[in-house]
Length: 419
Image (cartoon, rainbow, N blue to C red; front, side):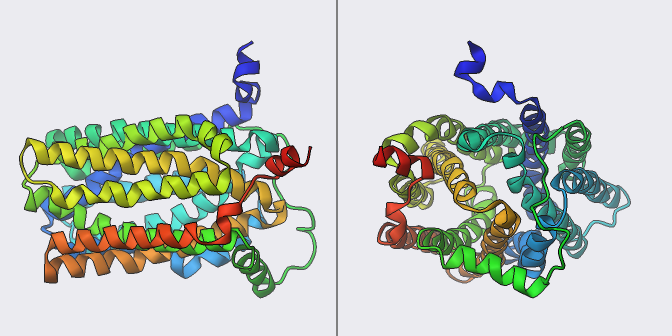
């Protein structure tokens, strides 16, 4: 009965992958906040410097993303996932070691974060392309929804845990939690046994790097529905990068809230993600892929309207938490539907390149958007920078709503309509 109601329980390989992902996500949620507090409070970073820290994290996606997509399509994904997990654990250990030796500085932190980002690039491209070898195609949307739910739970508890750890241990030592999580994740991933071969057919044939990159780009940007989705996603990541660069100092310095309360506001994003991911399947079936993603996208500018209205009092904290909740709700609904759609319409031989192309350009948008947001905040003030983000997110939503993507459907939805 339980397997009939929860069919993913019948796929132990996916369950182990899901467990590994959940462990890793908890550690990542801790590090995301710990790095920002280390840069802001320990190293005294400005808004622009916080933007540069964000850029360093995602710069490898801009520099190497398309090549990595080709590389992932030529290799088994499981060894890549295991190797990058172990390597990321070692890289993160450098932060508490440098702090203990009194060598931690913003330039060193930028270098470490860049290396971490390069490893994460390989992991992410392989990670998004791995579930199709673990579950049948009809279960992909559910599989990605469960991953989004565990991510949302991590985002709920992780920031609060991070705020407490930063207060008790300091930011550098809090990052040890993430390093340990990657070790556990790598060990769990080593026990996964995929249902089917991971390498796309024809990988034993001569390959041409330039042609394969063109194939990936062509598939993403010439597709009538995937193209508009990709382009507006790039805009979303640009303005999200700008927001993240501003939000840290806005909460910690402008509003003068503690690191713990900063973590609490982020935790409400996780709560919203849990609710959204739980409802995403129903919303997708009720509205269809295109309308569901468009509707979820409109929640972000609405959410961010609340942030510049917040002050440093209790009412302000409530507004921050409400805004983060609506933002998380948007992500929770959108991500599983979008990932299921992208994976379902993309041929197996192009999965790595499709995912790497979209992730690479999305992260490249953060590389540009984060310093821009920081500069706007430093020159015109954080409130102007936050309103800049609100307007940008609204423009992105209008463009997607007016595109062909509003007609996007899953292949099985088309079949249902015909029958």
